[in-house]
Image 1 (cartoon, rainbow, N blue to C red):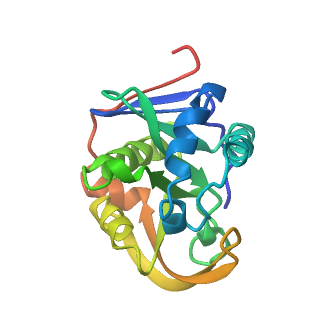
Image 2: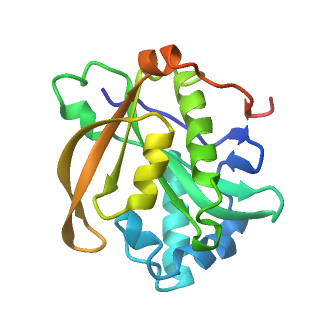
Length: 202
């Protein structure tokens, strides 16, 4: 089942990142990575054509409240996003009874290959299965996106099936692979601690 969430005031710290709500002054950083050809396309959306386009999407992040900015501690700038969206599994008989959300993420090209996204995804998993009390998380990647596949597998997700995703921004169907992580499996597998999270003024 889909679960209403609000990530606006969430702050999660990892070794190298801060996962936090978006702010108006993140626009320049957001546009800098989202306008690079090939970055958004890996996630199903066309790279941004203008700062005005980035502003519209940034506003939607803050309105919908289900996407966090990824701030790089050392470089002190936003280098990507990670969110908890409505999941395909909510329509599946085997999973629709579970409190579930879909993990989605994007990372600036200059930061690929440094292990930052697995670090962020693991932190969000801990938050989702902890304070949000979710029972399962899903994730997916386009068949051609080997980098995202490695992230998903490193974070313990189990392959469920191949499917197709209509990328509205790209106006095309893209073959994808769908995965799930049950909280019960995550707990049995030895969940790891170490991230600090807070909400509001905590």
